[in-house]
Image (cartoon, rainbow, N blue to C red):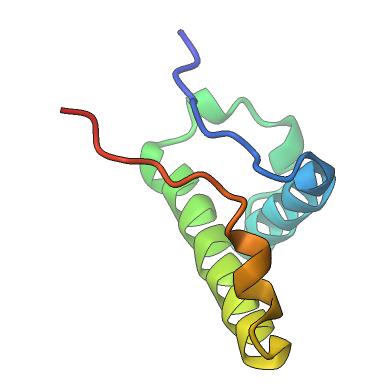
Length: 87
């Protein structure tokens, strides 16, 4: 099966932390040895729970950073290119 994942990590140094978060969330959801499981053999709903909870946690971290930054986080994120819809 082809890997059609086109998600890019915008800050390459965060890759290890994002993977650690993924495994922690999977463990909290009851998936044992998630890092060794063939994700293609899991139902999309199971993988969706993991990804959805990663998103919720990242949004929560971002909100906390914004609340505590005094505007510094906003200027740091301006270097990130926005994706626009393809027509």
